[in-house]
Amino acid sequence: MPPSGFTKKPQLQSPSPREPSGSSPCAACTVRELAVCSVLEKGELERLNSIMTNFRLSKGENLFYEGDDPNFVFNITGGTVQLSKLLPDGRRQVIGYRDKGDFLGLTNSQTYNCSAEAITDVKLCKFRRVDLESIFMEYPKLESHLLSMTRNNLADTTEQLLLLGRKMAIERVASFLLTLSDRAANRGEPDNPVFVAMGRHSVGDYLGLTTETVSRTLTRLKRRNVISLGNTLQSITILDKDQLADLAGGY
Amino acid sequence: MPPSGFTKKPQLQSPSPREPSGSSPCAACTVRELAVCSVLEKGELERLNSIMTNFRLSKGENLFYEGDDPNFVFNITGGTVQLSKLLPDGRRQVIGYRDKGDFLGLTNSQTYNCSAEAITDVKLCKFRRVDLESIFMEYPKLESHLLSMTRNNLADTTEQLLLLGRKMAIERVASFLLTLSDRAANRGEPDNPVFVAMGRHSVGDYLGLTTETVSRTLTRLKRRNVISLGNTLQSITILDKDQLADLAGGY
DNA sequence: CGTCTGTTTGATAGCGCTCAAAGGGGGTGG
DNA sequence: CCACCCCCTTTGAGCGCTATCAAACAGACG
Image (cartoon, rainbow over all chains, first blue to last red; front, side, top):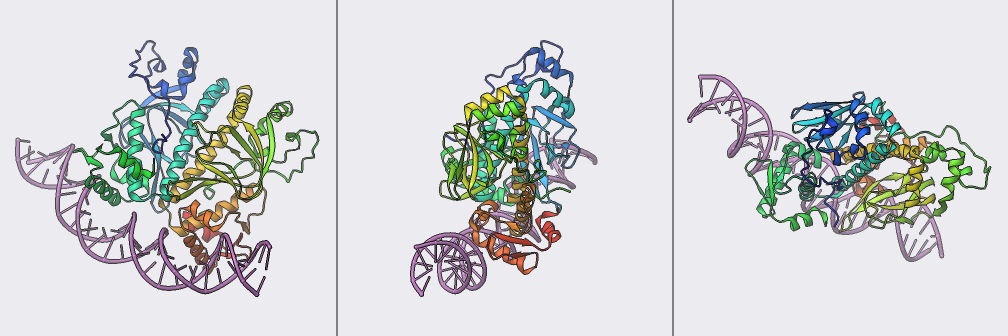
């Protein structure tokens, strides 16, 4: 059963309310199983901890912009970050979304190749890029795990190419809803109703559509009784998952 | 100067006609500087050599199909491979192209997530996946370099998202020609006229367009004197690179 | 020289965009 | 607590870009 256009990550086995045993943030981390640091052991975490700082971002704030010097890299410990690119005339393409456990900001080029914006309140670990790279030298298994995560990102992005290049509007929206639902389940959150953190405009920029087309398409799905729209606009209930999957393109 | 939608790889410094000094294929390899094995030293190459086999593919043959068991991974030493995905009804999206020096076939999932077809005659090194993974354990720098290459692939794919999601047909074709040109230069081959190995249909499936639209768009570019079409159909001369770059989206 | 395949050109239609306006929800100030 | 405002979303009308359908054209090969 191929999932709906996103690659499963290691799943949170339980709510796992890890007690803050030590004073170090890492010791109290609740998302480590999801993150790149899952491969490190106690002492090694201390080392990681020593080069890390924690901070928060409010909904709507930007973490970095396309073109900035890529001096810092990040680990999300809570919330959702939206990555996007711009054309000179302002047309925007949303590249993807990153959730807790995801890693962010490492690039081969001289600048970040996309912008990152918090679409919910977000909690992050922050590293100087050079510091993290030296840690990589010490613990190759970190880089090995990061490679695995990057391959997942690539697989997801590749699936999005198929969506943008070849799917109709209704197929795009159907795929999107299924992906959101699966991602929530993977984080151990309810997968139905689907929580749509981003606005219609962002959804459009993610799916290569306009706000209006997204809205119209959701209405069409509602009239077909495939979904129902909650009263918050951020809540969409999947009524007929099979039909939604058919529409999404055969999965 | 941001390149036209593809990430530069380490460049071939010279034609580098490496003499076949030993009997091992790796010792005679002419593309090692481009490839993941560039980080290995002499003795280590022997180790790599011991788990590798060389073979060739003719133009049009498939290396593997989406859904196959991903038991083998590959290194391209010559020619070009096209990666693509299919929807159940046959709509196709070309994911990208891989050239000599590129690495191919490693995935986290239980199957290859795209199909790979030789669009020229292709020379390859082939590894059993499990063998290569054990080599990775021995030489972490291999995995480190592979991560870097994967990040480049991700950056390129991300750029393609912008193209498919937000660019007009003429912008897509312009971007495509510039990318092809840059890629050829990177391989140490002539960048103008551009050699278009793939047919119009494949170009369409790469750019999210139909064959007809690709053809019409090339004609429009020709009438604007931005390009001229050679007599082989595979040869396109860039007459006005600046205008082409403008059309490609502001670069 | 004929056939086959891939490309170009042409005519038409449709999906999604653009422009425009109405609707709705949340926050703020009275 | 209500009224107003602002922003986001939804709905509507019309158009344009690209797809579709169809035919002419061209190059490769026998």
